[in-house]
Image 1: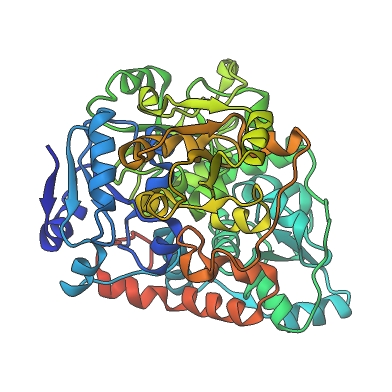
Image 2: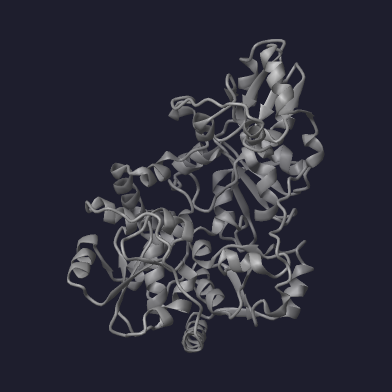
Length: 531
C-alpha cells in the first residue's frame, strides 16, 4: 500500500544512511523549473521504461514527488503493480516542500553541477577568460586546449584549435598529448562544470604543467564576441608505453590521497547475489566505442566525465553501491576520486575488465508491466485509409518539441499525465490511434488510455518513423503546443545551445550561485579536501 510522507520526515530520510530512491515524476520541464536537490527526474511519461535501469532494487525505499496534482498517485500505482514494495508520496508535492521552508533547486543534475562550483571554491581552481585565451593564441604561446565534453558535443561546436579529450580521459591521455612541462593546459566544456572538474583533475593528478579552466567554456567564448568552430574531429591517439607508465603513477597517487576503494572479482560476484539487499550499479567509464567492443556482462556505459557531471542520469538510488570498470584502472580511479568526494559508495574493479569483456550488446531496456501495454495495432497504410474515411483521430504522445517539428496531419498532441483531459476534448465516436516517434511513449500510455476511453483505442505500429518510412507526410506546428504547455521541455537549459546569449548568461549565473543554495539546503555534505 502506498503511504504519504510529510516534508519534514522526507528531509530527515535524505541523510539517514539508508538507500533512498527519491523520484520526481513530473515532466522534465516542470522538474527543471524547481525540485528537491537529490530528486531524480523520471517523468511519468517514461516511468516504466526508465525505472528498472536506474532503480533496479524493487524493495528500495521510494518516495515520489509531483506537483500535488495526482501524478504521483498514478506513478505509485504503476510502481506497485510492477513490483516495487516500499513506495511513498510526498504529501502536497513540491509546493509542500517549499512551504516547509526547504530549498528548491532549478536546473538538472544539480548535485553534480553544484559539486563543480564547490570544488572551484575549495580548491581555488585557476581559470582564464576568452579574451586571455585569444591573446595567447595571437601571441602563439605554448598552449593546448583540451575539450572535456563528449565527442558529439565537441563536433557540434568547439573552441578553435581545441582537441577533444573527455573528462575521464584527461589524466590518462595528457602525458602523450602534452610532452613539454612548459605547455599551458586549458580545459573547456560548454559552461563551467566540466571545465572546472577537468582542470582540477589534472591538478589533482599532479602533472607538471600549469593547468587552467576556460571561464564559461564555449558559452563564454560566444559571449566574448567570438565564433566557434563546427565539425571539428581532433582527438587523442593510442596511449604509448611511456604515457601508460605516467598514468599508472598518477593512478597510484590519486588512489592513496583520496582513499579510493577497490573490489576484487570474488567480492563483486558476491555483491551481484545481494541485489535484493543493496542496490548495485556496475558502470563502464571508458569511451562508448570501447564499451561497444566488449564489456563486463551487466555493466552499463557511462563515460567517466559524464558520470561525474550527471550521475543521476544513470543512478537513481541515493546510497547505492557503485563499481567502476575500465581496462587499466586509470580512468575508473580518476572518476572514483570525484565520486568519493560526492559521498558515493564507489569502488574500482581490480584489474579492470581483463578477459571478461565478452559482452558487446548494451543491457536491453526493460519496459516493466509489459502485459498492461497490450493493445490493438494499426499499420501506417491502415491508418492512412481510416483517416481518409474520417473514422479515426490520431493522438501524438511524444515530446512536445518533436510534435512541433513534425506530426501526422491533424494529430492532437497529448502528454501521458493529462491524457484524460485530452481525450475528453476529442471528437466523439471516433476510434483513437496513439503514436510516438517509435512506440515507447505511446505504448506506455496504453493503461491510461484504456482507463478513460469510451471508444476503441489502437497503437500505430512502428510509430511516426514507420509512418514516414511508408511515404506519408508530416506537418509542422512551430507554435503548437505553446511554450506554457510544453511540460516536458526545459527551455532554461536548451535555449543556450541555440545561440540565445541571454540564456547563456542566465545559465552561467545560475551555476555560479549554486554554492550558496547548497549551503542553505545543507544536504549535500560533499567531502572536498580543503573545503
